[in-house]
Image (cartoon, rainbow, N blue to C red):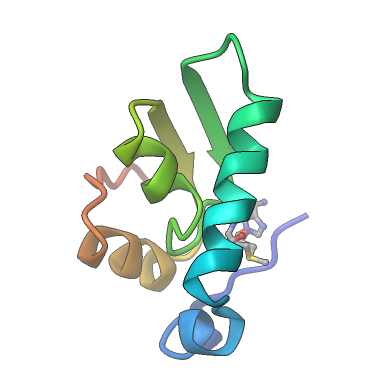
Length: 85
Ligand SMILES: C[S@@+](CC[C@H](N)C(=O)[O-])C[C@H]1O[C@@H](n2cnc3c(N)ncnc32)[C@H](O)[C@@H]1O
């Protein structure tokens, strides 16, 4: 199943944002769940709002997404992007 988020890419982050302390808690919880792992495959990475903080904490993250517009936002957040057709 493919559900591209191209149409909402421009407003995605601002409509799904969390306060900083909530985001910190989510990332901490993800890290607890990921204990013992260093490699992450984020299918449907979107704007990388979770993958980028995990990458910043030392995880090796590969994200894939069908939406180029979401990936552009991920790029703007500092993720490296490679486009493959
Ligand atoms: C609800 S968003 C979640 C984005 C991100 N994981 C987050 O939590 O903010 C779902 C993402 O999955 C992508 N997607 C949907 N179907 C997909 C598929 N079959 N393969 C890869 N990405 C897909 C969409 O383009 C969108 O960016």
